[in-house]
Length: 358
Image (tube, rainbow, N blue to C red; front, side, top):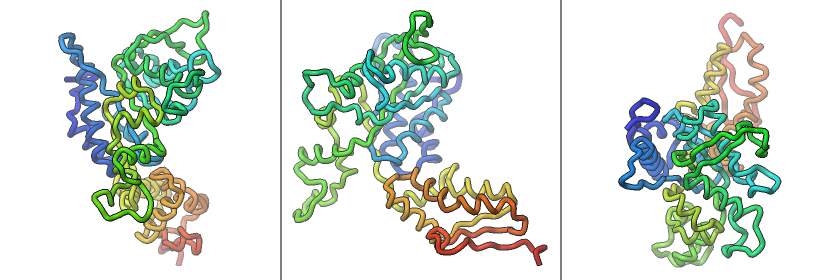
């Protein structure tokens, strides 16, 4: 099978690309690789004799563990248009807010208004959990914020031809609509689903947290491993409508990042933060080195913020800000060593000076 005139990468190749950019999350990466491969294989074949259903994906996991990055990296590997939309800005048609159909405009823009390209793109819908119904029971009054939006999303996830205003915004009689068929668009939905682990633990008969438990086979059941055992009924109980869950057959669960995983993120990926800072300093002729203790301190501060991988950048930007302001004007510094004391704001970094200074 091919995609855009190039051979479609096999699941193992897709995962290898993901490994280069995203640390850990092995199960989620495998599930995504297979789902994406099957999706584009289906698009390529166009078979009519066996109806191959779409493999849209639901990614569950706390903030900053790589949901968006996974989706973004997939689109880059496959060289297909990619757009992100936040489910919280969506409303049912006719209400103030953004029509669900409008999210297709983002994809059309990402495809440079090439409809054919947009029709095989990837659309990432974040914070799906925020449009959950307020209770597990369908409400008698319309739930503007939740169920209505899910019903609208359902239409485009299933595969429909949607008339889209090319520039976005409300549909105007004067504005010609662009027809987009969503049948071959891959939808990846993400969300933290706070509290879902408690619903699952009720079924399994174990408390996800708490003291005084007997040491039994449930001892290691933490929030993350509970989520890995999620069943459709629990997502319904959480507030997603059954039809929508039926359209998201592939579920990938992402785990909170351990200290070691955050350390690896700082150092290992191609776009690792440490490498980025070293490159920036190198452009000013300064060698930059981080002591290991300093990086562990960065990880510790990040874990306190509970922001996952995106917290690493926030912590580093805060501490590096001053020296990134000052050092470009200094031609006497050959090397800058970032120490733990510097990260703790107790001491300046260690400088090695150019010989000519003496």
